Image (cartoon, rainbow, N blue to C red; front, top):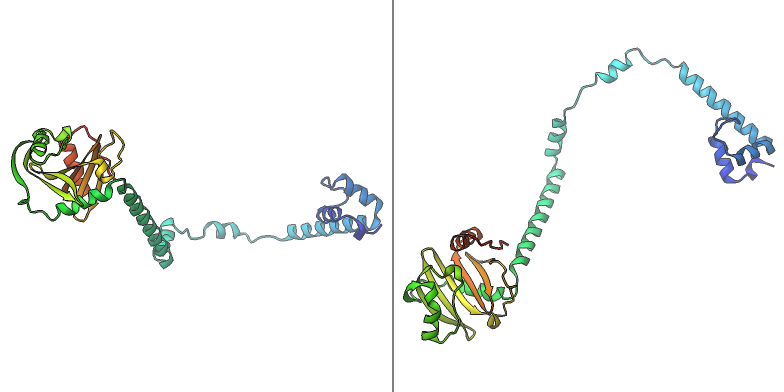
Length: 261
């Protein structure tokens, strides 16, 4: 039986063995060596070749100063590697790409949270507030808790009252205007300075969960906060940023937790 007739697995094992007495040989390989003199001769020749290589390697004497040369190589501090990265254009391209992606996802997250049922109507009211100069309001002297009666007696609007947290806040003026024929009751406050608008939830398709905190949104230079209490929705508006609206809500209701978007 020739060595070439042996199974590939046996041939591979014989190539890797280190002599006929190699303990790593399988039973099948040992049996092949016993039955195939050519394979046995090949295995013994390879073992002799390996032994000769080992003898030659052991005869090579390394330089006496090799260890000193290796272990005294100049040390490159980590700061040098960091400085190397900082001057590479590719590094900054990757950093800028990551920052752009993060900015995009933050923008999308804020935008998605600002969009809710009725948010378009709230923004329309904020845009209307940006056009006001104060002369549009009728003078009113009294606390906000009295406004429900004023809107009913003067304009026939029933249950257009403001939330309880605004009840004790002095109002400076009020008015009623319409958006596409739908009434909006609006109140002007000066201490602190903001505008509160009251609408019926069904008129503008608001669907905020009962008991949910104020929802914040922005439109141009104005910040708004929306809260639904049963069939009635209140939209607060002021010229400023989200942080200004959050500060106002905390001032009106210290126990509140506005849902900052």
